[in-house]
Length: 232
Image (tube, rainbow, N blue to C red; front, side):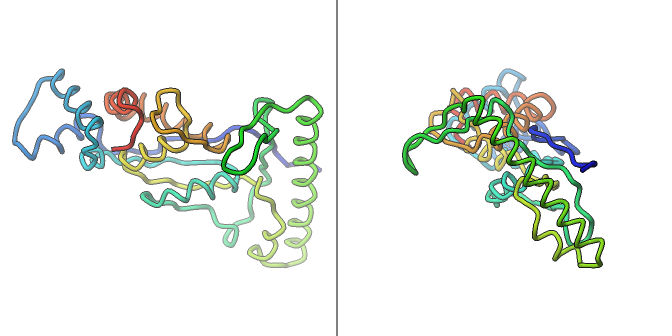
């Protein structure tokens, strides 16, 4: 079988954004008609995050291109305070790109639902998880191609494909909603509210936060972290 790609990373790319730290400050200061120094503006951002004055953070809007396995996308789409436009298996032939867990992915679930933890797998478990995933992906792709080659509609043929198939979507989100996403999808050491995200979506959330911090609103992100990573 040729042409199949296996990967473990989560793709996060910033396509566009409107607004930055100054946009948040302007939105907040319009209520009083005041202005402030750079240091005062940093203090204002901290106060907004600390006291959860959330609407000024909506002054920043971002658009990302996300490439993740389908099972990660389904969790991502639970964040309904944002917009999603996903590639369609009805309108195009899908790409043979599948997820397999990397060696750092915890494999052993300890405990019961609602009160469990994950631990690393041993070498044999790592081999089994990867080999089984690759074998299932290859078989399903063969069946998908078999149907397409015989004239079966794309929307029917795709039904044999697994959740490990990568999908792509455009995520349009304001900063306030993005902070809500980050507060839930990254078990960060600075978080004051415990969260238990799926390993793969946490890897993606880390990339989202890195992009926002470096390219969009660094001072707002600093205020978010200093104040316990609670979404305003």
